[in-house]
Amino acid sequence: MRSRALSDQGGNQEIVQDGKHVLVAGGAGFIGSHLVDALLARGARVVALDSLLTGRHDNLAHLAREPRFELVEADVTQPLPPLPRFDRIFNLACAASPPHYQADPMHTMMTSVVGTNRLLERAKEDGARFLQASTSEVYGDPEVHPQTESYWGNVNPTGPRACYDEGKRSAETLVFDFERVHRLDVRVARIFNTYGPRMRADDGRVVSNVVCQALAGEPITVYGDGEQTRSFCYAADLVEGLMRLMDREATPGGPVNLGNPREMTVAELVDLVTRMTGTRSAVVRRPLPVDDPQRRRPDITRAETLLGWSPQVPLEQGLEATIAWFAKEIRPPEPAVPSLGRFVGSRPFQPAEPALGDLVRGPT
Ligand code: UDP
Image (cartoon, rainbow, N blue to C red):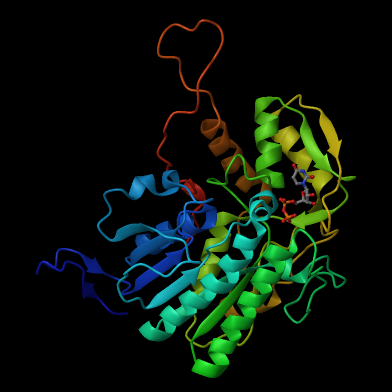
């Protein structure tokens, strides 16, 4: 472990225990901002690079006075702005929820392809270790269950999800070509469905939708018959997995699944959230989106073996923290004057809290 004085002004008031200069592309996003917090907590100096298209200032507002942290607003599809030299680069830059990544599909594709290429070039120049946030979407609508890393997937290359799925698949190709051609030290995490505080209420994903609808007493939207399955991983667990994958000295030699193997149907998730919130919301059926995967569950044997990692936070516990966070996030502002009986206005600025709270996990 190295120590390094941080201050350029000759002082050694602050010591970077971890000795690392880290770039988190996508650092203002849901997972990226939790990763930034975890890296800072162990002493790294962190730059978050984010276009703020889906990432949010609010997620990092609590770091406004943190001298080891900087937020740089930039889009990775464009030439990178001047940045310091890094030891480690995490690439989480990409819209990740179906409604958001489909809103501008060409840009989504370029974010994964051009953006990843730029960051890989940067890692090569700096001699940095590189971690790519890939996705379970590389398996498409899988014919192999649970999904192991050796499965090549079943992706529709021309459908509405392809901008994300094929973009992320191409990014993986680039990463492993940089490893083969330039001997870059690379890691690829295939991230399965993840939830927790700092998800966007307008994200369109099932956990955020169902929790917000339940809290607001609005109809809960179930797409299709609700029998499709997903496996939900709490953000603190996922961040721990990402850090372990980056920290491992030996290169893993291929992608590593990170996710929670507890599989459930969407209908079961809705039942659970309904019980936990005590909502009276009714369920309404909506058409199943095109190419919506029918089943998804990670085989995490590789992560367990290589990283000694497995999720620790039970779904009920993670959902409790998530519901509590959304309850604050979407509550209407207090009226400044005695209420006229009807609320008009928008949500006030609220700095995000250190949102994973008591559930931030230590080494296991
Ligand atoms: N889903 C749903 N209601 C919603 C949002 C999503 O039933 O309000 C379904 C969606 O069709 C999918 C699953 O929940 O089968 C997970 O969707 P999400 O968008 O969270 O992530 P995905 O795994 O599809 O990328």
